[in-house]
Length: 188
Image (cartoon, rainbow, N blue to C red; front, side):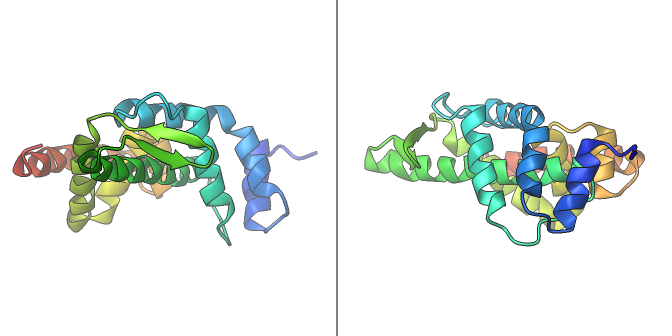
């Protein structure tokens, strides 16, 4: 009898290319994914038309279509899902920002409408600052994605990025300071 957790087995099945492994992993971690999605919507000021369930499902659709998915551990899986969720919310914000000048407010997503509130400009400024942060080091932006967007702990972030907790702590402090400076430069 194996002492491996269902998540570990799911990750191994996914790496091995087993049919249905991704779906099984999402089922196992669905509540955690909804928590991450809710954090994205809360922090990114999305209107409540897009709910955590819808965001998880859209992320699932984007990830399920990718070939060769492989995650080292639970934290790495959450970090990857969080990046996809962040990109979905940013895409909606971009569309909303563009539609603002055209008078529309709804962005279609399958059969649902997604409404992004008037803070889309702030969300886009944050996204641009994070992209500029990559110039200081890709790991800094990945720490922000894990800690801020995915809501991972220092331990989970360290595991996802294969670095020490101390490195995560140091990078988190540095990244926040740099982001504050970048946002101030942009007047955001």
